[in-house]
Length: 182
Image 1 (tube, one colour):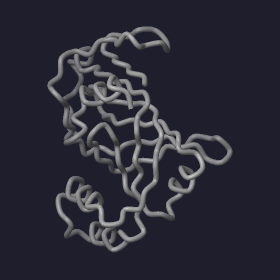
Image 2 (tube, one colour; image 1 turned 30 degrees about the horizontal axis):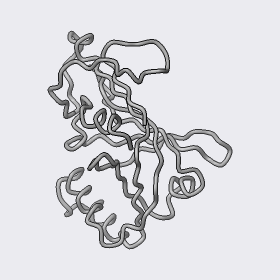
Image 3 (spheres, rainbow, N blue to C red; image 1 turned 180 degrees about the vertical axis):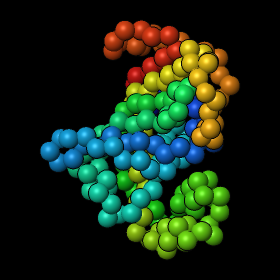
Image 4 (cartoon, helix red, strand yellow; image 1 turned 90 degrees about the horizontal axis):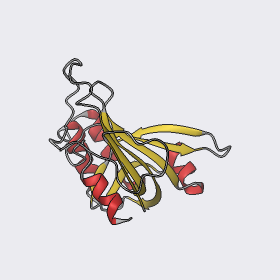
């Protein structure tokens, strides 16, 4: 991953460390059609990690086609987020604390029946490790300043207005967009 991609992710208007939104992965099936899969994620050191069962449809597709698109964004105004493309590596969960950490982050603790069920399957869980190759952010907070107040519990960084990066090559420049390429 390039330094500019890492900087774009670290400066995204959504706090990737605190965010409780799922990541949306665009995964191609064997016929080349894209599918959107929402998963819990953890961001650390420029890498996005998810955990899912080894028999999940998404794992089978990623074994054959490891290139994905991704987005982490709000569904309610004002809109902001980060999106990009990258390559995934699949790794057994093994003794990694990642699943337990994600359950704590998304559910609060491991006492719910869902948490217990997920933990009971951990020996057959797989880590999806996504290394972004390109990333862009957007933040329409200013232009949507009169929109209804957010009620989805989102975590937004108090970041300065984002501007175009010099690497932008795809389409018209838009105020509040930042793009980075490897």
